[in-house]
Image (cartoon, rainbow, N blue to C red; front, top):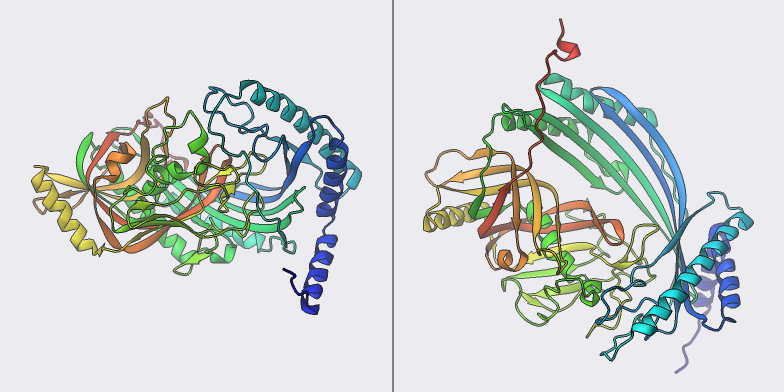
Length: 555
């Protein structure tokens, strides 16, 4: 079938090509890619695919403590990542064999730093050397793959996708430098008001990442991402000498999306008040019983416990526990819960989601992916590494600059069809405590992260780090703040204990670390009532009380 090419189409194509040509670095990458691919095509074992990725990263960071500027740094770098595949789409040097204990090529990547100036010869020289190393590594890995290949149900190593071309104009950081130096000094000076606070740090990071992608499949993509991180931390000594931290982090895209100065100062006042409460709060003991997770806490909970276990590349890793590999089209969550990932969604309830992007790091257009529908597992997050029943990417191949791409999370939406009010969740908690003969249950209000193991050679557990947790007593006494607690457990058991979801959604923006480095992700979730959780005591950070008073208190 012939497609009619209109004058409008020709104009748009011409304009896009002009935009591409204006970017000097893109031109350099394309020219060297074509030269290298042509030369290597004459080798006995020729590459069938090469891609160049470059992250052009500008970082501005300023930090302050107790009212004084501690550091101010600007840095620009360009990080080159090269992937070379020899063989073909069905079997290449990245092959992961189910019969092979060690798979050397599965996450191989060749990266380097290239000049920040658009000097063609200097940049091409680095690309040439890095490509040569990448090709030699690919040959070694491919030989090992062929030598160790056994009779097995072979799944292709690389999916076939439609090439795309996309271009965004360059961006730059524009802000009032003096104003924000004064702001972070002001924020940190608030902690001078409490003499028992012995450490505070306020940091502001502004990051632009201009991402280049070119491949021998004729894809070329240039897109921009902006991130702004305002991080505030303070610590206090508890009465027993234990060090207790409290956090506030604001993750967004542009600087003007942060709360206003008065709102941040009010948050710091609340931090100081909470630190004083935590100073005298009792230590939590090991516990098993009912609990409520706030919406933000539930987001971290789902990200760590569920999200990493539906990343498709893990299903081909013989080290992985494959928690959900054989559970496709079966119930894995309560019927009223659905889970979607949508990197095309840039905001939720007027707040920016940092896990959004237009194209992933393998040049595949982002899209909404339904993972769980009414409790039933329907899908996995896919990069261009196929798995059984899923032969194509769904736009979730992601990596930090300089790292190898694997399937990773984006904007995670946990949705409920049976929302319950906060009061109803609390009543369910108290009733369940009575059934289990518990004096109290727990309410996890604030968490700052967590981790999980999916490896089959280690316990498949998770650990969530809360910093504001309350006991809710059955007898009606006031809720009691506690410290020194961690939420632990195993995923399948914990999900089987979910008994209710809240009616209010909240966002947790954060950075996730895994095989392909640190990437920005967002989670939108309601609160959860879980009838059986498990906690353990957190490790203490005990320090001696100072002999001398703080300098500003000497007189």
